[in-house]
Length: 415
Image (tube, rainbow, N blue to C red; front, top):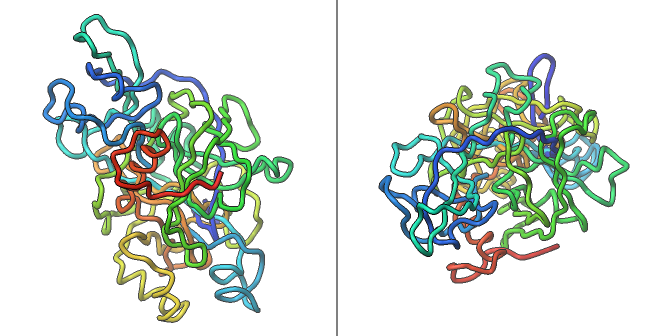
């Protein structure tokens, strides 16, 4: 995130992130007796499917191991006017420095409870004699509910307030910037969501969780990425369908420093959500093109989600109407920010934008994608609209696990 003056700006010409983990007590909610295929170590179980009316186990889980879920311009160098070069300071998309922010969204309800209630989601297998023959006890852990609530003040984040924040590492460049490649968000023990533009040019990737300060590696978990899947219709020029799922070689240990985010309800609109409920976090720069390196400490900034018309009008004024129409992709993208010094910025790409309907639970609403400059009044960061991709996320993880009910896999593997 970018932290401008005494406030924050998060953004990317595209943004990125890393983690560190400490071990804490899981926030266990309850358990259900389910068939084994619905509860595997590290899988995310949606209680609205397992237990839609508050009773026992129910229909098969279409998620089968998924769980919920930022923006600036692509990763070019200095200077360059839109779209690919020339004079002018860091214009969108290939002229400015890289980076991007991240997000999340409000809770989507628990099993048999009112919308907005915390959603138990991580399934951990334990044998229970109280379960009928053929069933196992599946312990449910709350997603999107940090042990420490985010600060109401923008700037350096409170430790453990964003336990879903992931730090991507380019294994072929670990000697530079700690290998920092971008931001991401933990979906479950085995899967991380990020922007496709952060990983399409990488050949070997790792993910760290629990990273609070890049200067301190204590309590950080780092895991190798085994597979990278990007959207089949990803457009690298216009950053459309800019989303990827990373499959980890080994699972993360889930605790207060590494906890999945909740996925929002598919198709839900967060337009009009205020800055009091939505936060983007990341290690991005504090102003446009200061440096391509991530900042040392994780930062946060509250941002409102604005209307599509407001975003279109703003970018039409900056880029011209035809360019704005070519790059903006509603409803697959949303825009947030627009307040002076409060924005995502360079190196925030792939980071999460989260919102909370009811404290203390957050849902993933966006991923930092792109923007024009950082922290400018009336200019907005552009984010992947995660509610438009919930089905894609579910099907992609099912395809990775080889047990899909989808008619065809909506993704292509690049690693």
